[in-house]
Image 1 (tube, each protein chain N blue to C red):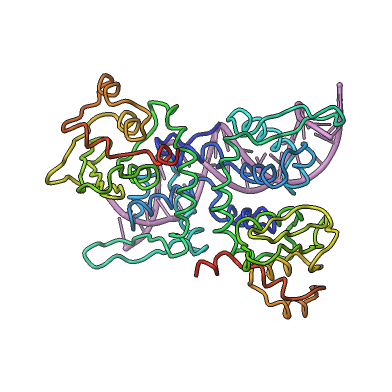
Image 2 (image 1 turned 90 degrees about the horizontal axis):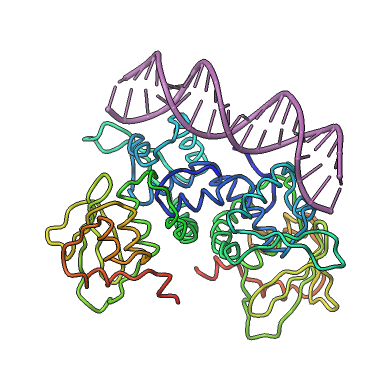
Length: 213
Length: 213
DNA sequence: CAGCATCCGCTTTGATACTG
DNA sequence: CAGTATCAAAGCGGATGCTG
């Protein structure tokens, strides 16, 4: 492991998680739970396979992840976050919150994976009416359908809801824009976003930053 | 600027601050305030001068820092954090807190700069008796004397206090060990740390992690 | 197919020397 | 003081091959 060689907590932390791809690997394990090698590759478009293998080795050595044989039905190993790895959540939150405004200027060709919706759900959105009954919003974008569960908190999970109070379908850029409050629903619809349901359900979602102001 | 090309707030943030040395440059500006090029080099032992110049260019382009001509007496430019740059403080705090336990296994040859004491002061220490009158602790380690001001919060600043309630002198490893609560004062003294004053003043300093527990 | 290891060309980094 | 220039070494990305 390359080190800055500084007696400083920030530098020591960066020695472990500062290399290219490392925090994105942790992101995958944090939002998806235990993953196979192949799942990680899918969630990290562009990573070289030798680099993934190397980073996993380093992270295991550093005590951030653990490699475990999966229970019988699955014939493969799974990579888990350790306790120490889960403690990186505040780091994800801080960088993700700081980086969120940069999504506004993202390029159209940027890769997207549906499960990444869990990050804005957890870190950038709050329920504007926690006193009301929980609602679910179905989201169709990217590689798989996702469900947003809004009830006090906002959570994202893969799958299809039995009953959805609203359904969003379209480009991830438009959907995130609306969820972040950067884009007006009407404007997004004009650009191709489809929404079914009562627009009121979308107003349950409040950007955390706006709540602070 | 190299990009992961992912439509994800974490990845977008890392596009800007994820490269080698970048966050350490921000650390310097955060704990020292506006710095000259040479000040930055001193606070970043091991950085290649061309890399520092390149990173500063990138950070300026990204709106994180600003280059300004210093007021008349100084015949040089100063690098400042912008508002956007100051908003990286939660990122520093998160990584610094996560990395703090790693200092326990640091190598003896690790570089140290006295002003780095500001990080544990701000992020890892609290005043255990905020109801009592403020105290100051003089610290002699590294390249310059530092003062710890304990009164509700804990702050570190360079300089020598007129009246110090306690004076710590010795290796930075021992001093940080005591401040973090990893090392017993008596044990540190046995290893060469010198302390003058009432040991009670040191007990005002409480590791933030312990306070949480 | 899952989970790597190897090889190769390119880019980034680190060390040093040099300049206005 | 504040960089630029140069070059070797290390790291990265992409392709491919190997093993259960």
